[in-house]
Image 1 (cartoon, rainbow over the protein chains, first blue to last red):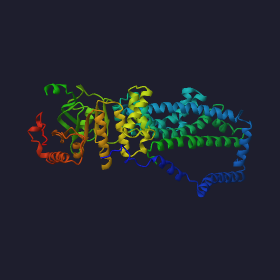
Image 2 (cartoon, rainbow over the protein chains, first blue to last red):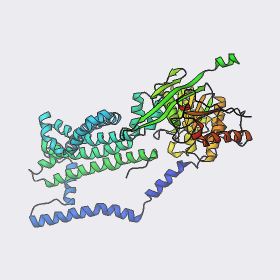
Image 3 (cartoon, one colour):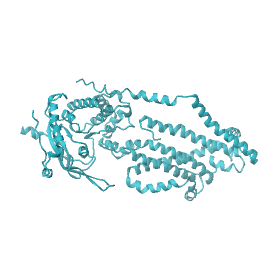
Image 4 (tube, each protein chain N blue to C red):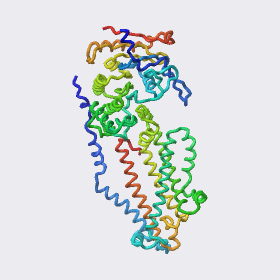
Amino acid sequence: MSTSPGKADFSPPPAGAAPVLRAARQRPSLSGALIAVASVAIPLAIWWGVAVLVTHMRGVPFPTPLDTYHRLVALLQGKLLVDFTIYRHLGDSLRRFTIGFSLAVGLGIVSGLLFGWSRLLERLSMPTVTVLQLIPGLAWVPVAILLFGIGPRTTIFMIAVTAFVPIVINTTAGVKSVDEMYLRAARMMGADERTLFLRVLLPGSLPHLLSGLRVGFASGWRVLVAGEMVVGTGTGLGYSIMQSRWTLDYCGAFVCIAIICAIGLIVERFILLPLERRTVERWGLARAG
Amino acid sequence: MGARKSRVIVMIELHQVSKVFHNEETGQHVQALRDVSLQIEENEFVCLLGPSGCGKSTLLNLVAGFDRPSGGRVLFDREPVRTPGPDRGVVFQEPTLFPWLTCEQNVAFGLRNLNIEPQRRRGLVRRFLTLVGLDSFARARPHQLSGGMKQRVALARVLALNPRALLMDEPFGALDAQTRDRLQDELLRIWETHRKTVLFVTHNVEEAVYLADRVAVLAPAPDSIIADLPISIPRPRDRFSPEIREATMALMAVLANLPCCVLPSQSEEVGQTVRLQEGG
């Protein structure tokens, strides 16, 4: 019997198969482009309609998209908003968010790995996590103020605690979804506990973990604004929105809202979602949903 | 003869091993193994044959160290088995390659745990991927490979660790017949050059006869090893030869008569192994 080692059962190199699939899915079409444009144009048109209607019927200056755009340009050119430039507000907000979210990511992943690993730890801590999940971000205001007083640290705490919950829940689920056979295989190959965590459980739970990061990002980002609004941090996009009502600078508030939306959208669409997709595709795992 | 015998090392030894599984939800106890005794010598290729659900995989898991026996002793190289380890390389029925690693990273996984320095590690990875004919797929991810190719990588990753024994749990059971034949031949080719003790679990009689030095037939508990048949057909073997067919028939007869092979009184005894001598 001729044994040409492993030639016959080679399926055609599937490396070529993936790009074909991807090309088919991403083929640009006219109708697709129209839908994409409409999905932006229709909400803008509604906004515009509401602005015109409200301005005429209630006699208050509801900013139109164009007003907002003009104000944005002015602010970008250095005009002050609530005593500071838009860059200062944006920078402070981003800094607070980054610190809070990093804390949530670090603590969330570590706790998730532990809870997924140890049935005992999971049973001890999951009730708390479930309760945390039910607390709306804003409900943390009194707690945060008691803990940290009024200031940026309060906002950071609120972001961290809000983003932490979905991250820890998803990481735990991810670790538990790692097939027992992978753990056996790893142990059989001499993996110690550290290797099991870092090279099996962590990558094995990554698809879940990444969707946890996405949800955690969204919740944390929302609570950043709320936290700055309520806690009174002196600077920041959320603070500016709240303060601009005293100066009747509604256009400025709308600019801040638009910036918040834009940043959230960019991070979600262009960083987190592609990261999740790429991981899942590269490993050939089926995407949930 | 006596001098030769004394040099034989028993690599794997099961002494009156029992395993009971507890189902926490139903509160039921399932006796998977009862009083199973088996010895496997160094460099021996032993197939453990039996119908599905007779505890073959349970037995292999005990030797691998994934489970602890409920009774009896499991020895590997005269030491009690406590944990899994790279001295007993396991090839599972599913390849269980890590999907987040490339083929070469999968093979390197165990070598890293053994703290083999990168340069030597890379050499070993290449060598063992070449051995299974997959050196050109080093950078591929497992999901890009066919079932047979994945099993080759799974074999390469344990061979690279230079284990003292290979524990194979129906490794070719999920493959199509042609791929299975080819992988059997490759396993034998590798085994000829890298002598190892092999415990190979299968329910495929022809596979067992074609591969093994010895076939042990395991019946469901409360029975245990009901036949232990040396296959002395010289290698390389021809899978279509009359000798193979004859031994296959003999084993099939044992399997077909499973319920009447063991007398009730025998099942309590220790040395209940029925030794069948091969005629030929």
